[in-house]
Picture 1: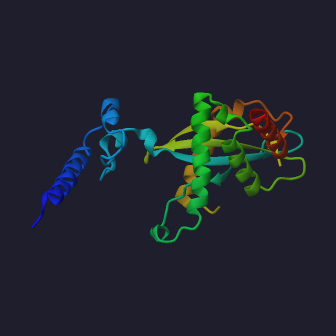
Picture 2: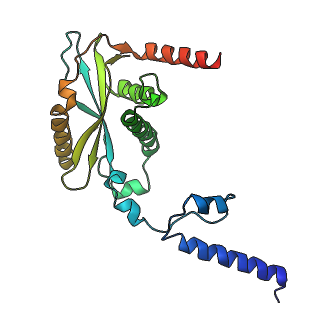
Length: 174
Length: 51
């Protein structure tokens, strides 16, 4: 037999479950967050939300490109440095390069957002900028005296893949 | 990095769009900054903030 404490526990879990299910379809405002200052009510959601799916910016792919310039200053052709290629099914089980690419990808995203907002994080001395630059320098073979410039571009959508230039760096040497 | 045919076409479209955008009209190469110099500048900024 369940005593009073057990019934209270079962009731509390039931209420949390109901509130958690309700949260699948609602967004909590600032007032609701104040009432739940300890963040006891579950915040997770089962499925991708229509609010997110309706925002095409959530599905941008960021691409990293770089080009070299000789001593004379003529820029070369753009080359892909980080490209989110189509994934194979086997990569769902074995994809050792994903973590490294994700780290660079996060720096690229931070840099792109900072550049658009005009925050100091977009400066060449910012950690995100230096991380992306180092990755480019490690993956591009530069001749003596050559400089490198990188660009972060985003492609949006699955069909026409609209392209936008997000960040264009200065020229740098190793 | 080896790209498939479809990816290569997408990449070429991306480069074409880049060439048509600000990248082609950006100022040319002037006084490139070295990575080491940027690291040194960052160290000076951090030291100044901690001083």
